[in-house]
Image (cartoon, rainbow, N blue to C red; front, side):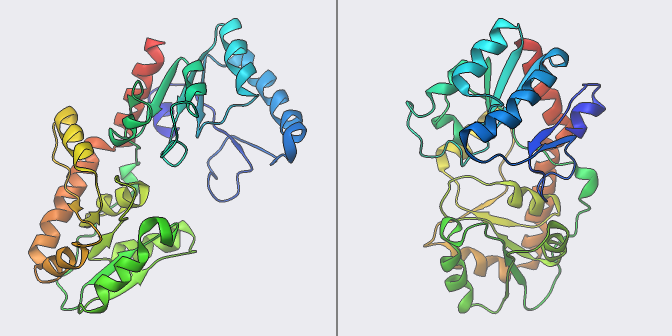
Length: 291
């Protein structure tokens, strides 16, 4: 949002119940209860926004009013719409379950991996404001710190991370339940970061670690890596692992401090090229202009 504003776009962020996730939001709606509760809160907001908005950019499959009404109303009032998927909102869904997305004027996903669920989407990699991330390269220590920060232990494969580290001379730091600023302090201390072992692509946590110049290990679908490198002309620097190879890959990095720093430096360069928020804003503006 801030990147769009820096580009001269008059952008407003509206969320449902700000809590801790989006303190930067311009407006926060009360969390409604039940169908009619949602209508009582969200319809007035839609009516308020309609006269002053040219493009409605919806996230996570949500709309302000019911989808069957949202798309026709926007078309009737000559407003444009974008539906921006974030990953877990489409992963594993059938084409029928995602058919409602065709009502929007454009669809956006955050990776080439996600195109398997929304083939006609634009790809806009998630962005970070890199001014907030000063690189902290891995240290040359005898007992490296391996960090893992699961949002869900089951989905991220945490049991395999714990098992892989048990027989290695490392300090395992599992970060859970902390405020983001506290978690960031842990990220900055890490020498090796393990993202996830199931999803097939990386998320914001891995991006933050790479922005801090940390080597990241994650399970990535080979087809998605190939398409990303072909389309973007870059090499994805994440160390690819499976549950079976995780221990071996960690052990290699534990024994090679210089390699840790090399991968960390390549990771920071990759994020600067692919995930800089200002570059992402340029991609969004181009999509808005094409509607």
